[in-house]
Amino acid sequence: MPETPRASHGFPGRLLVFEGLDGSGKSTQAALLGKWLSARGYRVFFTEWNSSELVANVIRRGKKKGLLTPTTFSLLHATDFADRFDRQILPPLRAGYLVVCDRYAYTAFARDAARGCDPDWVRTIYSFAPRPDRTFYFRVGVSVTLRRKIASRLKINYYEAGMDLGLSDDLEESYTKFQTRLKREYDRIAETDRFTIVDSTRPVEAIQAELRSNLAPLLENFPTGADLLHDG
Amino acid sequence: MTGRTYGTRPPGMPHEPLRGRLIVIEGADGSGRTTEVALLKEWLEVEGHAVVDTGLRRSDLVSNEIDRAKQGHTLGATTLALLYSADFADQLENKMVPALAAGSTVLADRYIYTLMARAIVRGASREWARELYGFALRPDLVVFLDARPEILLHRAIARYGSLDYWESGMDLCLSRDLFESFFLYQALLSKEFDWMGKQYGFERVDANREPQPVHADVQRLVAPLYRITTPTGPGAPPRPLPVSRDRRPAAFG
Image 1 (cartoon, rainbow over the protein chains, first blue to last red):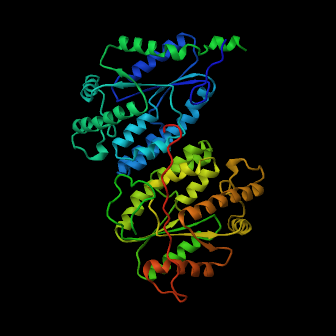
Image 2: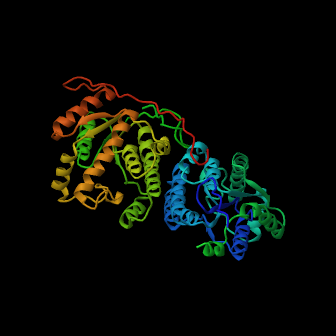
Image 3: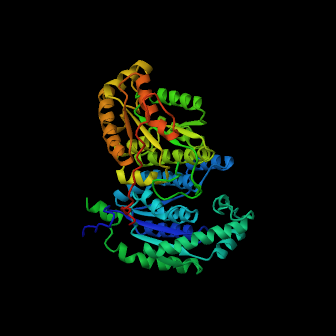
């Protein structure tokens, strides 16, 4: 069996990242892809970046007291990401897994920039996070994500609507404004960081098929769990 | 107070100059920082200046989480460094900046330098630490209370009867022996403070002495900020040093 070629991050595993606005369909696709990869016999580790208990508690407290600023908000999420990176991303990456991340540092790049933080500053803070082997960006219009949210009766979260920025007193209006800013940031990063852009207005099956064929070259020489066992 | 930050001005930081003065007292545990802060505050208040004192890990936002993390020793070095920076940012924006804007003197019992030194000796790069704290205001004066490790050791033992796990850097696994670890750790920190002293323009004060002569030296440094005349005349003005921002991030550059 040929030796697994090392990726730019130098670890034997591969880092597959799913990014996009809330309601862009990335989580559904990431989960489906994870299932498929496992069924193909690969060692897969799936991780999503939601607020951990630590950060959720602090953010709740901060919100109540009106203490959170874009800088503290950014640093708290960076703290959370660093913890997740140490525990959930780096070990499987070093152990040779396909690590599927539903959101990665790019979420912070887009969100913090949309809150007015200096993009270079944010990137430096996250410089411990290696560049992924593939980043799928689920591009979608803000009106679509809002419709999906309303249709599935999901509540709009205060920070996801950027209510802390005082863009509007109306939750839906603030959501639209803030998510539009986010999308602009994502679109910009998609170019500089060479994201694979996925048109997420299409049917789930069509998108999933596209992802699978897109990954074929990346998986070509990548060992399955069985390969690794037989290889000793 | 110019109100200028080391790096890019963070969102929400006022554009207009801050009227108050920011004075930082840095130094290891046992260097006499707390005593000097109390003396300095008293003196400035007698001189008629409003003083707000602040220290590390006193913010409402994350101090619980920091205490918990310290108890469990479970967080990685980067994570802990970021948690501290969030705590510092909270104090800077919600306490120091409003006080400075109102014209008060902010007297900081340690500042970003201690946090940076701790992060660097635990594996962070100097560049990373410097960039991370780019949002911090440049103080009008940074006094570094410089005391020999033997002095620090005796003061720690006299005060607490023992050495503190964290102040001895036991989490770095430099030595399993607390006493030895303390010296190794203080030496590592000292190296970083030397570097930062040059980088950020510290005024070093010999803190191997009793509080009164130390205080007299600090007064001489502080006096020019307020045009106060001290018995021995005005001291040298603080030197603000520019910090270059030339580095590109490693992984995402």
